[in-house]
Length: 595
Image (cartoon, rainbow, N blue to C red; front, side, top):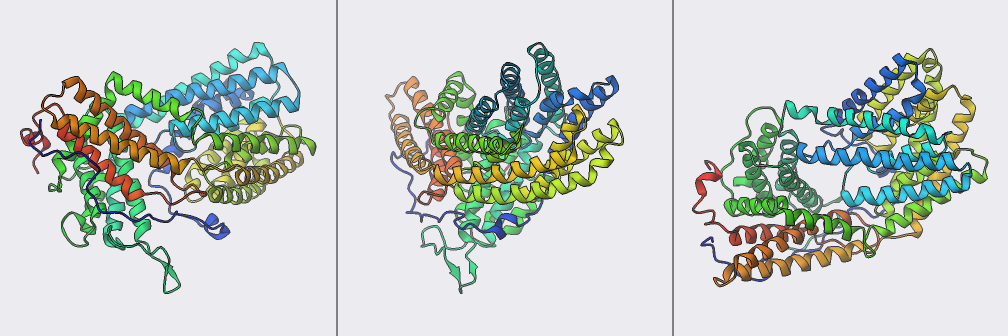
């Protein structure tokens, strides 16, 4: 046991102000404004090109380019998991490949058994809702459920026979396995690359917060404009820093066994966390220039910087070790599975989103069918892409999707003659637009859609040429009706459960922390009781992170206690350190590193 005194109860922090929601208005200008490109935009772009090029060129050499639509379903799996550490990425991508194959199998079997457009639309809407919920529950990250819905919906309206299905699924699984290898190949060169980038982002966000922290934590926050013009950036900076620090801890917890590099990264996150909690420009760990210099060195290929110790570094790191050990144990894995099932249960805040997706996709599909569109799968995909966590994001996505698709149709009309020069030209055009989509989509979704739309239309050319006017007309109609139906669903079906889940998670964390401190301070407590208390506290910390992430940005709810979330998590890590079954950080100080 550590000699550190343990006092049960809630974290001893001052009452923190409730920050206002990040977005409220429905502004077209903000929805269409371009952002700086992502620092890793080239990773999914290159991965999907390599993962698609090999199967496409192989099928081209075999004279079976008509089967490329099935191999492409597996190749698109290379878009996922680029922000995850490689140990977790391997597991996540395996699940993505299997999930893609499962959705495709349902679509192919349905298409082979019925030609009823009404039935196909119903199945497509149901698949879209299930894929949305599963992607949100597992937090697989961008591009989320849209790729799954695109593949399964397109397959629903393609001619199919039962005897063809095994071969088509084999192509998908084979291309998916190759995409898995492509996405994990960078681990051979830079094993800690994802962790280093996550920590660099946390340091950069902490530097911004330290440079302009706004009102201090214990003082009132004025969310309104200054001088009637600009809005105080302090709360926004703190929100960004909190999110980046949380993401860095999550990445380090998921990366597997600690290494010397990861130990240094953990110490850097503690520095970022300290700068966020009490920013003091120009002083110590909160010096913005120092944080930016650490971030630049961390993001580079050289050695990770060794920062001086921040207050509580030893306790924080031992708490992280205790949490990591419990998460990797059998009971921790079981608790994670139970938590996933709770997120999918009757009281889940994801259920309103599922209803929103189901209603929007079905309405879009039936509207298009009523207007004579024979294969309204693009309307289903458009509506599914609009079903976001809140009304503001759904409005933004409606504008972005509509503008991007309409411009993309014009691009398709321009490149269609080039793509019909020959099969190799068609493959090259698809690869180019696949790369361009990932290169541009981080600037803004509408800009990426300008490249996604011609790529999706060119995929239809693998099975044979189609009348250009028919393709363009159907796509425009599908886009407009899908956007209208998706936004209507987002307006009518709201998600008011998210804020309540955050409050419940905070209360559960407080109770678990108090119980862990009581058992840790009781010399008569049995080791198994202490282990159980630590496991309960660890599970509550994981649930707290996920609840905050799910609720962030929900429109119809009260403001989220984001600073209290961070304070509760830090207090939980310190409690884990104080109650761990070891002599404590004082006895093990040399293992922390030269600080």
